[in-house]
Image (cartoon, rainbow, N blue to C red; front, side, top):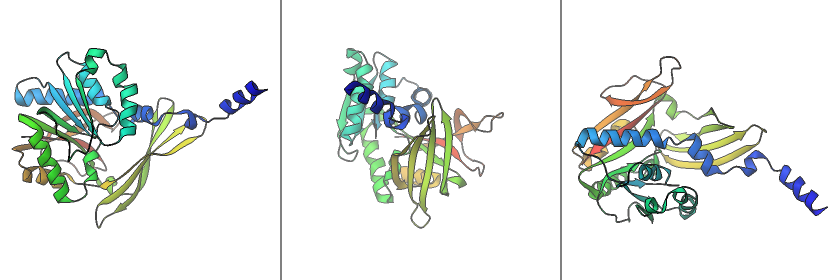
Length: 276
């Protein structure tokens, strides 16, 4: 009888109940292969030397850093995040999947990006719009300055950014993934301050839903604002790389190229590459 009850309880659990939000995030949001391709190739094109050491700020599960470590026997990564829960998940699931000698080339810091002290690195990555959490100009400029100090003499800061006129709207955007739907929810936007509240939800084939799997409160910064703050923080050159369009689908094609002008599209994705 006890076994039957256990089976019944297990079968009554929904797909949302059994899912791991970090795995879902990595599968639906992150493209660590494409991201590292861009960072590695762009660094080498600009500096005429290979990149060896990167620092991943707001690293979360350290998925990007682990991809970097796997790509070369001389690659090193410094990971910084102040959320011990997500770092613990990353240690078990991502770092734990690396070989022992690969793990030794990862330096993990549970710390604030304003307080952490790390060795000089070739590149700092602040991706997934994580730096948007700094909603005041002075705070964001100070973060950029601190990153600049952490770079080698020819180091580069890599940021991603999104925008377009739909970025300022309150809306939900669903997207099909393998076995589930990813939903990006721009739940609230205040045009007076630029403050924005966004959620990520996941829906499953059995009709269940993981509500507010991730929530972000930040400022929706514009491209001109970020470029101006990087200039004020002392970077010698800032280049914007925008994603091209797929002619067949009208969606992004995953190819990012330098741009000095853009169309007034509903949405865009891009990188800012700030040279020390």
